[in-house]
Length: 612
Ligand code: G6P
Image (tube, rainbow, N blue to C red; front, side, top):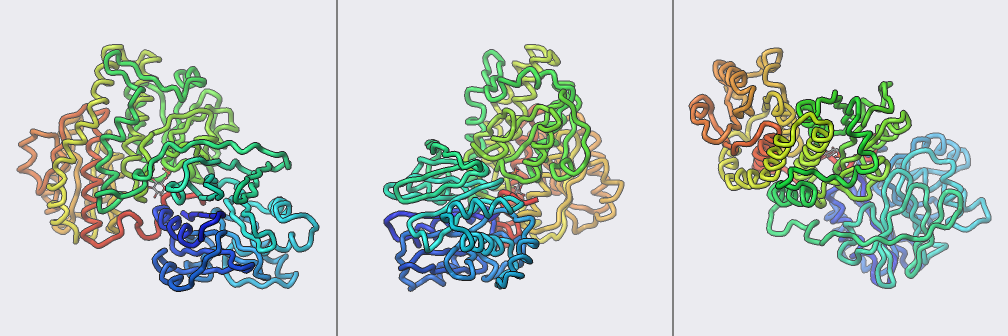
């Protein structure tokens, strides 16, 4: 979703801001803008569409100011256009502000401001916020940072803000509540970002702001105060992140890079955590709550999007291996139900970004009901990682492609390790079985490598079907959530309508759609559902549907029954989703490319969804 970059230093701000905005493009956005302090005045440029449009608009302007802010906007209040783009500026032209999040009481504040004679250009909540802060500043005799503090007392909602005021030209104000902000320390300079990607090439020394903290950021100093005006000592951390992790390298797209790096990232994720020799699983991140987790009466897995499908897959695993009742919930549904929770429940929140608003609220809800709450997040230090009691990082590295790939398989690895750990502790699997499973899990990256070696075949299949306007994905048991994930991938990046279904449910509805034009991707592995799925394939073929089957290596018999097939190496049913999802990621990728879609930044989608 929206992205933030800020700079104060000795260099010209414009190129730093524009490069930063390009690095933020991955989050998903529909307009972009910057404000630079130029000889005592604000120079503001905003443009609908890609950052490239903004860059063209800035060509030849020769701006040289060394303090500025930039923003990529993902529209919530008001359509994507130049006027609604950020930064927004107060009526007197003195204060510029960029904002991630949503101001819930903006209509109340707006009508108060209108009554005082203020006018508004845009439809946004953000313009209300900047006018409101300007009004408090003008009508109080405190300094600007204190005015921001006072104004925010009246504001309900979530925000990450960076503010520039011409009256106090040697500072930026950064403040957060529910929306992340990180400050980077440079040489006689500071950078601000909604994540570190806009300034990773300049510094790795960072401070993550906490909720309700206000930072006054100058070239050579940062002063942070909390909501009670208490000074907070800035705590710098060193980012363990290299620039190439957020660059495409030799790949055409981030999505492709991220699909291909899965074997290595999954090895990273397991490193030091699974010991094949002894069959041990070590999860240091859940040490303090280990007893609660092992003796949970129920596991509730909650997430959104692809992370939800990781939860759905893990339901099979936890029930099979740990014999614990499991519920899997969309966080957006869970938070608005009246869920029955107890201290014996363990809620596991799964989130790549660690910032998804609905998942974060689900975490708070479960915590307040006394449940133990674990996080499975990819982004270290993210809001969900911090809000949960304990957790396990997926260590998949930054995921830039909007459609999640490597983060999904890393989530599955973490959930597999957790299931093995719990099963071992509860005694629901014996040591020999545990050892065998740990060994198999460690081989998964190699199996994925085998699938990737045959990526060319998947491209050929994509070539046959890319013009279809509907797809159906079918799977059973462990492969049912993978059917859902495969369909989600396709619709996200190729805009083709696709539905994932449990194979046996086909006859209760989707079968009506099948004709000679309809490609149906069937996950038909040699597992316990195999014979049943074969019958489903027969049902499809007798209605002239086109079957693309994901099959187990060496299954010669099935090849004659289907139109196209992709083989995956033999793998235990428990871990088969980790391997079978990979051809579906590639199929979606190639179809998206053939359709000319922007696979890394699909229309309307955002990488981290920080609004509900
Ligand atoms: C967005 C992204 C998806 C992601 C979902 C949940 O919709 O586009 O790729 O699966 O959010 O995000 P999370 O960061 O919580 O896993």
